[in-house]
Amino acid sequence: MILSGIEIQKKITDKSIVIDPYFEDRLNPNSYNLTLHGELGVYEDAVLDMKKKPTLRTFEIPPEGYELQPGRLYLGRTAEFTETHGFVPMLEGRSSIGRLGMFVHVTAGFGDVGFCGFWTLEIAAIQPIRIYAGVEICQIFYHQISGEFVAYKSRKYQHNRGLQPSLLYKDFSDGKE
Image 1 (cartoon, rainbow, N blue to C red):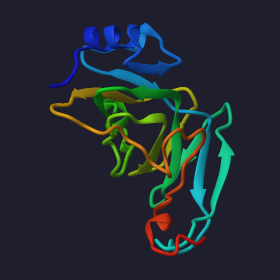
Image 2: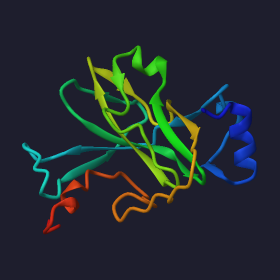
Image 3: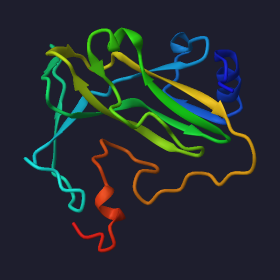
Image 4: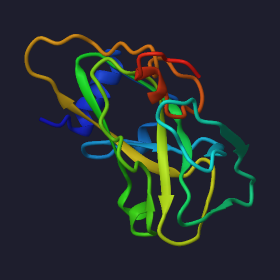
């Protein structure tokens, strides 16, 4: 079952869900709107190799906005830090963003119970679109989990502090960069 907005508010009060910073006016009937941080990243490698650490170039979104181009993957992140205890967080782009032809998470909208950190956004656009830091870009919602579970622990993504490029290369046996 998905938590209602009222239930999300209760879980924030009892600290089983953390959203920092939190603003009550971003609470929806069954989700909470998260905003785009001011930093974006693009891969510099012409060909990405799953076994190698990718090179990520980061830059700030200027006050006048930044124009995303089709055919390019941009990494962004939420401005909010989230933490969950006993719930499965999920992320979806806002419908207003999708209706502009912008994808907020190409494939990774599913979180794990116990995740703590900022959400990396895999951003792509159908046509050129100007984006701005601080826009309410996506919404987080929470599923109740049934049965015993082990909270998420990752040597890769847990407790991240900035943009997170793919760390898939660490899954290969040698784990070398």
